[in-house]
Image (spheres, rainbow, N blue to C red):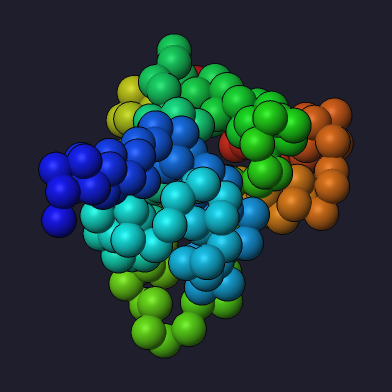
Length: 206
């Protein structure tokens, strides 16, 4: 084999690997977000990412590892966490209004990736479902902790069920996600937030 042929083959191999990893990962996130984990095939991923299967496996590992990387990208880029305000009501309302905007943002698929990506997972993908469920549970736990802080501070009744109220607002979040996937506008979700916050318990009577 001539040296020229060898250099040509090396150049070809390098060109096949020459892709922007961040752009490819963003494309994979969009595929998983749009179609869910199980219904997104390696073929559709490589087409969306603009790479071939060997390049995908070399850069990201298998489909599950690629999904985990997509989850991390989503968390860094789009994830909305509860930020502590002057009281729990302010904090929860701010979170819901951020989600109303995020879930209907036309720059990405509607709704929440952490909620929709594991819908209808097959038994073999239980690990994916568990991973996303844990992330949702962490959000619910942060809401409950915020509510308990207000109970301790006397801003909410001492006998209030913090866990139950947190579960209610977690259910509102999941409902807003489904509404957005079904085509609801930001204005509609804002009205959902208004109704949900109207259910916030009154402060204890002095």
